[in-house]
Image (cartoon, rainbow, N blue to C red; front, side, top):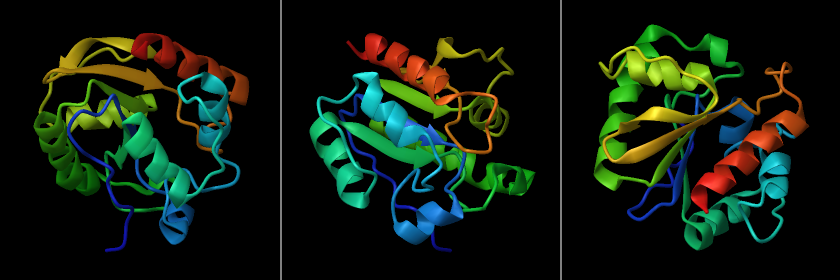
Length: 175
């Protein structure tokens, strides 16, 4: 199965965790590649980075090496829409993600969307927790958890400005 490469390593400041890769992202080879996805615009405006990036594999790799921000997903199977995922996908992939978080111990696990966070918890045998936006009152191993709205174009309930505001709050936490 073709999917996106994980950008994982020790000493990550942030591990960006999407729900699953979009088909467009897998075709182009980098995370959040759909031109309508608001991730890159919000990231560039958030203050998390000292420079602006044009969405690309090279930008993703530079963010990983220079800023210590990793990339992965709860489920590695790509789809056009997150609603196409099934329980079997979460059962397979969420425990793998948990093992990676425990192994690499990023300072902050940044989940894109409550659905990503809730399904991660559900399929890793974690206690059901009340998920709200922002900093959570629990950790995964030693990693702090932060949840922001999913920047997908399918998540039209959240504007670019709202998503950017949450990314700025993540930046405050990092500092």
